[in-house]
Length: 188
Image (cartoon, rainbow, N blue to C red; front, side, top):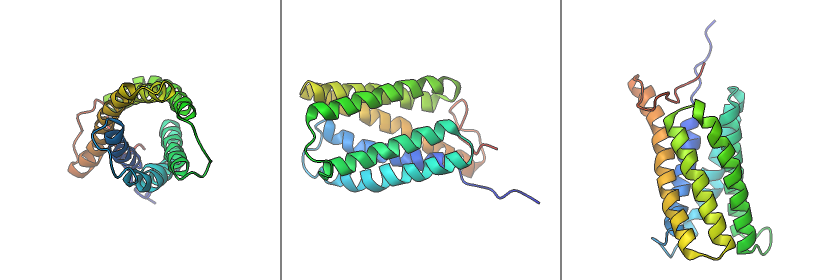
């Protein structure tokens, strides 16, 4: 009896993270100033729900790193969505900053795990913890320049995440090894 082939959930999770991060980061960088509501649907469904689903499938495949990362960042986007909708009441800029710094600490620890994974994840997590710290401190200090810097860093983070996820899709479709050092192809 042969085992059923399963799709790799990482490209979905990375793409949901990347697209949502790119759009929010364009606002944080000051490149766009109107229509911020566009981020909310992405946060709820593509950044949030899609990453949580990817995390569940990473759990089922036995990938602790993928499960922890996707589920945590999916929950982050759901928190962002519900906070922006006012579900948790009035949240101050300083408290948002604290949450962002806390996610920066989490991401810094996850980045250490990427040292044994691949260059794409290493770069994504490196840029992401820097993004979280810039945005967190920027919010706590009410520094628009730090928030803008965090926005630009977030754009770079999104590009790295998209590359990391989509190169695995291209490699699987083309049947070739992708230029990541250790691609995210389906694990056995």
